Amino acid sequence: MICRLLGLSRPTGLDSGAEALILAPSSRPDGVPNQHKESTIPDPRINDAIRAPSVRVIDQENAQLGILLTADALRLAGEAALDLVEVAPLAVPPVCRIMDYGQYHYEQVKREREQRRRSKGAELKEVKLSVKIGAADLATKARQTAGFLDAGCRVRVSIQFHGREISHSDLGRNLLLRFAQEIAPHGSSERAPMLEGKSMFMLFVAGRPPAAKPSAPAVTPSPSPASAV
Image 1: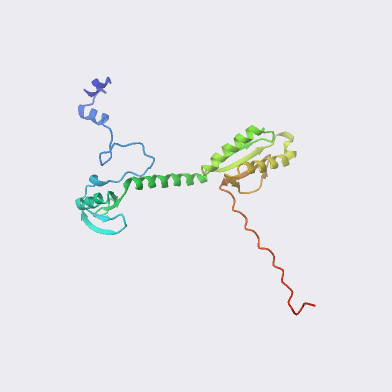
Image 2: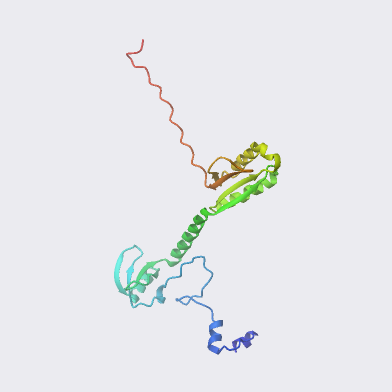
């Protein structure tokens, strides 16, 4: 019936119950429809979706309130204008916290995003230059490298020498050092340009190098009164 109203052809071999399951939107345990979430951690049960008759409660000040009836715990959360969140559903009884669930979920997603960004640190990108690269192309490569570094990646910037260009490797070295200055606000080099066969490269990581500590001025000892003439 539903398929006819929507103008869809009904799959053969399905009864009305199976049709309802196909067309029914998925929902969370608390009855709120699922939306696209950035977090990979499943949503906990909150408020009226908590099924246990009694729970162990931790309040918003991190104080242990002991085991309470779920109805009483919900009343306490409501009086504080907060949520009752089931944080340890497998415990006996389940452990619940009184908190602002919206703020908690936001911080959880933020932590996951930061962990994913840091995990990209092991990812190595490569940017290739040439000795005869133009100023506009060099600026484009610098912007691309800066984007990789801002995303937490390591970047290998290399120059491939062709033919007799290898006899002018100093040009490639100077180009790499100039490139390092261009992207200095976004990352620093782990080492000086290195020649490897017919290519020269530098390896860059996110972050600026630590500033060198100024050396303490040398103290010239003053002549003692006994040595004065």
